[in-house]
Image (cartoon, rainbow, N blue to C red; front, side):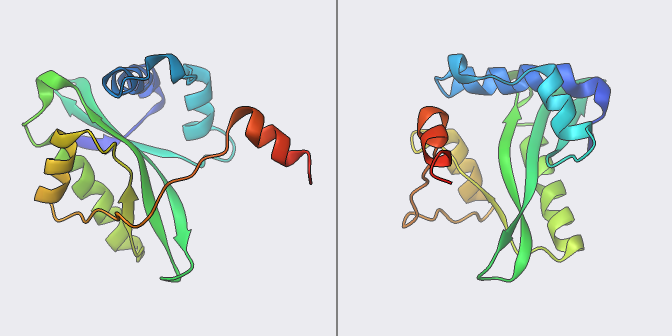
Length: 157
């Protein structure tokens, strides 16, 4: 069962984010707390959204996403920040169902895209994404400003 996340799901979602970070070899980089996620999803101005996969009453997966905008397409889109299904629940259709839910939201709202990033060494994920027709954008390189570099640039404003 796929459904929008509710406040009671926050601890489970934070736990899934931590599991994902461990899988991606970066558990020490997670700063997310229940309070931060509660504010992002359910605060005064929520800018992130989440759907969860539930199996026998337990949250076993999640898709955390936000709305973006493409100037080239001239439409909003969905950026999938994190997709994760617990190892024991994989190969049961939860990941596909989560992505299908986001695709349905995008189509219903007239959005032009559903996009995400995946680590280049994550072959199981890459294979799964290929199986649903996703196309890698090899010509694009993701850039990031964070921490001291972000603060330093902000000082020039």
